[in-house]
Image 1 (cartoon, rainbow, N blue to C red):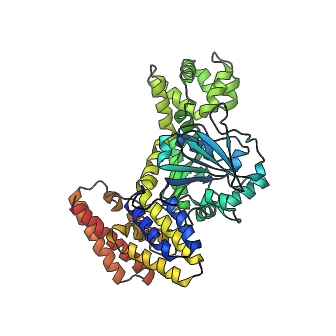
Image 2: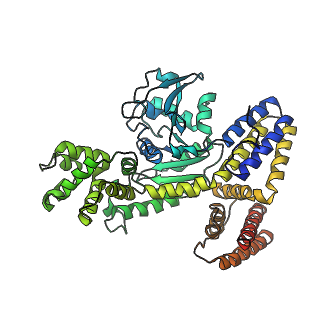
Image 3: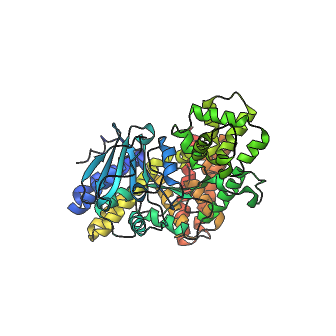
Length: 507
């Protein structure tokens, strides 16, 4: 039995309002539909669920470890990387294997504190894994690690298709996947022609909503593997090359994603999970003290880095390569050259900075966490609409429709109208001129008035004037020159600007 909406802790006022709507409707619905509403309420009260998707060997699990701050997700190809794994907060660290028939079996962590490569059970009977960690990051964010797309292994392909919802899922597997309300889509240097379709397919299986700038971010992982001299304008700078490629990929994947950010998952994992130690710092310090010729030779290739004769043991160098790759070693040596007495802690922070993780976590906060209330409420409304549509009862459909319309008519719920309009424009169901489509996504892409207006640097007085100007423009556009579909979107954007104007005036 669900906790009463007024007693439950929700992500914010919109989620609370949708919860009250669900609770009010349940007594008026069939048992089957009301039971579906129970599941919607459960998810609505849970932490925001972010699924990490992408092709096999794109480094998804490495990024999951970096996000969580613990090397718990297996990164080598094995049984576990072919399963959906949900990482969520728990008062005691534990891993549970969930079977297709609903049974659960606790398994121990491996000696390194990660999920064991060998589960010790019949793999064909396993639905997914549930990992509970006493980790503060997971208090308001559940991370779902998914199988890689494009696996050459037929069994993995079948499991991936299940995870994508392209096959009929058993209830347990379906619940493990479709609860996600947001997506991190991981790509490497080349975005393939079907990446956009794969992203859309994955998000169609998560909360039954198309991907868009509301609930999806793409990450250009393994940015250090980019050959900078092949990217025009990079000036042989690896990170600059990664930023240029991320911008190009953003054009390919938008409007399916809010942004494409470069990141080096290996460095992020090493710096965030305790993989960089004081002995590692001392080993790097020894490398920094080698003569210039030897250093340059070592950094030519991975093979030379571990095989060339020098005073730093080959085993030590192999360990550094495994944790940092050549680019990470170069970054660390540059830091040591600039500051020879740098501490191990500061060196770790420099490695973290070089990984790009800070920008990723910042974008997670601005796109997902700060907007969790709206994302969760919108996903819940989409779910209850789908439940009503599938019930086959016209009266039920009408009751749910009328209740949702009543909720959306309230000024405080207008954000949901904006998210709906943004999703329609992003999905192409309402065609808008490119500049106006960009403005719709801008208004719906943030909760900060300055960012919504596209001028965060302006003083408040000028933002007030700009908000009123854009409100009037969109009102005129809705009446003159817009198609009926565009007019509906224009009315929503006009109202959004008007509410921003009111908000700024009362600050």
